[in-house]
Length: 160
Image (tube, rainbow, N blue to C red):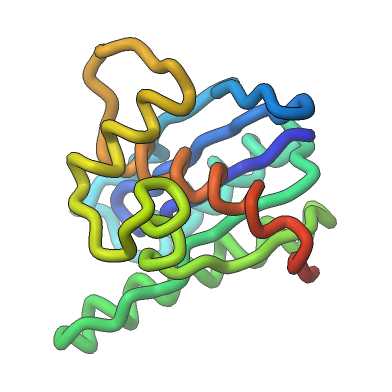
């Protein structure tokens, strides 16, 4: 089974592809789709959409996990992030992939065992679970791999 995890963003959109064979889970690819913050929002959204579409076409995941939006106190930021999630959801829907949305708390609880875990704790567990090298990996990519791992655990409640 191939699972894609996506950590949405309009400047940096993390992605992580894992492969699950029985109890063996390995990372296939991970990284960040980057869109220059100086570009107009519409151009950044097109870059994110095209990048996600390319990953979906290349890996044809059986399941896609997408992190739900966290709405803090800044409404403008939440609105822009909502646009980014919208183009990501559109790309996933158009690909025909099965997907589910996961909260940050669900991801942290699944990967670390604590829904209020720190970024460092998530990184440590993702490295350990996927046996990743100590190379520098962007936080967005770690988050996306954690989302993919969580989607694997929640795959009985997926929807399209």
